[in-house]
Image 1: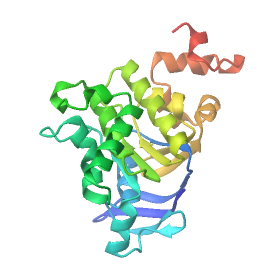
Image 2: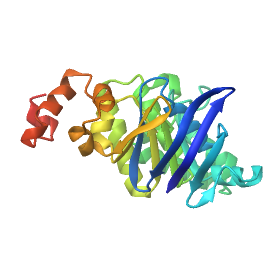
Image 3: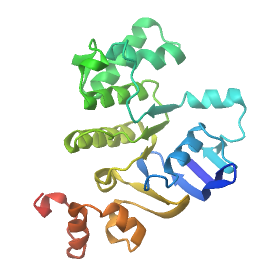
Image 4: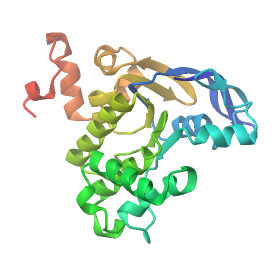
Length: 262
């Protein structure tokens, strides 16, 4: 579990995050949502240590990341997996070599063991047949799945995903969501997803933090979203015709998109 306690972040005289308190539980898909410029990306960067908070705590299973020494932070980062917005694969490496990269850097496995582990991860994301291809030879959705395979190669306790569905069509986004959700439960990871995708919110949002202008505006799960009276949250989530329809039928108890004729 990751806890954020009274976290503030300022750049010069501009306060970007104000008194953020949140809990991100293991075995659940924890989503951070908000409009562009709301501070959600800054929040994630503070959690993973890419930025230092102005004040406050970031606790990894009661270990205060903010006060750790450089050596302690490096050790903790080995327990983290990262999935970046653009997949961030190495174009000159094959799919297999990309997945092996963190194993080459941080594991004590021999070469045969690293290859075996990388293939296990590719098999987990249904990409074993693409292991000898290069990133430029596979689709964007497949690249995201390679990024997921690489992120789980070291069996991380904590998994961070920055806009994992960015640039993907709705069908492929659904595949990525289901994959992240199943891996979270399978490995019992603390998964934090920074997203603009409202399909993800309504599909896999087990714990949702809504950030508005640097403040935590709302917290709940995907079912709570449906019944929420928070206007700012509603304006964000129900901007599309589909989700407006979901909101309209909430009173009748309908929860499945399949019942909406879409």
